[in-house]
Length: 243
Ligand SMILES: C[S@@+](CC[C@H](N)C(=O)[O-])C[C@H]1O[C@@H](n2cnc3c(N)ncnc32)[C@H](O)[C@@H]1O
Image (cartoon, rainbow, N blue to C red; front, side, top):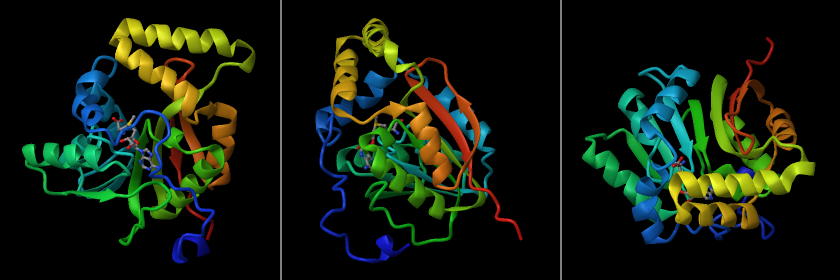
């Protein structure tokens, strides 16, 4: 792809520019695991992803928007190598610190993102991205998906989990209010405030838009899973090309 080789043109999106919740804030990074564990079970979710991707000890994996390592670390306990990529240095530092505490030396951290990470080694077996792609607007999501496709081996899988809306637009007010109120009940006012910032300032989109972007990047959607109408998990495969 020409755009990967040339110096970034002036119109290229600056993915380090903050939109929404500020993950470059060291207080947010320090409190991230405690806040998110109020509504997520990191270990259980990681095991589900490992099973859905059929990860094996010889596999290599990229985690885009790895944050504090919620998935990079459990995956590194199993797989040969994990490339942990995030635009926030404070989130990455926490990920590296947790990897050291866990005695893991097979996680490489990269201060880069969906649009700037250059994978210099052989294509990977799997890519994971959880709660991160919504930091890009739809056009740049499509570019990011194409870049991820290019970094995967044929037959390799992309596990993409994100805030993606699968409710009809007619009911957006009640759906978004329910989401904020549910978050307040489950995880408290601080996470409800982050949810409000997410809706207002970040770039979540509808599933029918996301489906099209995934397929146009070349992926085949193998599974599309949703427990509630604000979030979706996609298991996508980069198909083998016909001989
Ligand atoms: C909600 S956190 C998710 C972290 C982790 N994946 C998890 O599930 O806990 C979003 C992360 O995406 C990162 N991020 C934001 N924009 C990004 C970009 N363009 N490329 C890569 N990561 C990005 C943020 O710095 C933050 O660490």
